[in-house]
Image (cartoon, rainbow, N blue to C red; front, side, top):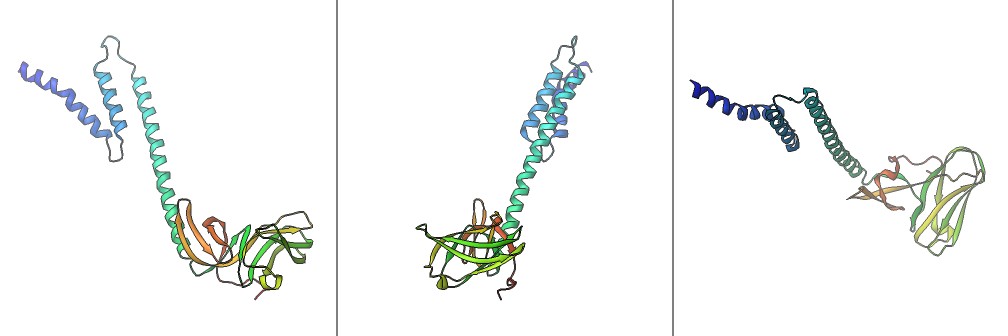
Length: 225
């Protein structure tokens, strides 16, 4: 019986190790956590019986490991959420093909037809101007006149202004001292998926990131149509 008991006791630590590892090695546990628990068990088994390590120290070590694991899970969840958000953004962008959108723009691609858009004034302006600058630095002013605060629709007719087709920088100026953001309306012709998210090809603007869209829909701007 003595030999049987001795054999059983010799195998007990190994069985105990497996039980402890199985208890903490859940489906999402990392190898690092398992290694930590194994080392902690080995430390307990090999400590000096006359000078046992304070159990509080083991609890503190395991609490620190649990905190690291929680941070790791939070980081993994954040990555998953970013992937999900990117996929939802791509699906939303794909649904905009052939629809009209407004995008914030500092440059426009003028062709043969008129270009519509709007700017938003925070203050009343007695003199409001759209300024177009071509590749050679030549500026053309589009007078919008006196405007009250709020949305100000505009239309640019390249033929009437004598502007050749091409890319132009666009900027809005007012005598109130503000520089309102210019929004250009155009139809989405294509959506491309890049490293920084969906990129939309918008008539009259060119390729723009998805986040520059300020308005969706087919509704024509008041005062123009």
